[in-house]
Image (cartoon, rainbow, N blue to C red; front, top):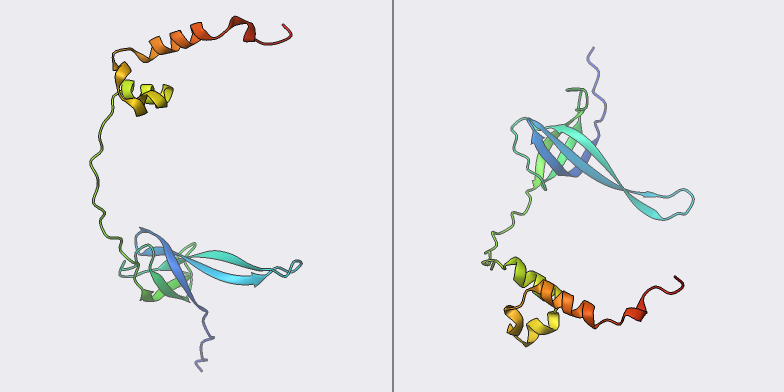
Length: 145
């Protein structure tokens, strides 16, 4: 009376999202040959998979198996976690020195002066711009007008 169940599909993929409750998004990569150009191209398919214990994290390599429809999008369930994601080590942060707007503006306008030293720290950056405008000859305007 009872017939054997058909073979279920099994894929191995990478968890790309675990923000939902008891659901993960698994990206499965596959290689296909382009029909015209014959180049092997990588294709990625995303599957919504059921994770009953909420134990999968982003970056984990998991094995998923086809199952009955569990919701509108979920037709897969996580069978096992093949490999856990590598956890990055905490990086020591360097102290950031805050610069005033004047220093940043002065460095942007006159990088050669900053290299020599802070000689002109008394003058405002706008005063140096006015001095440059006075030095430019007036005959270098647009031609033909």
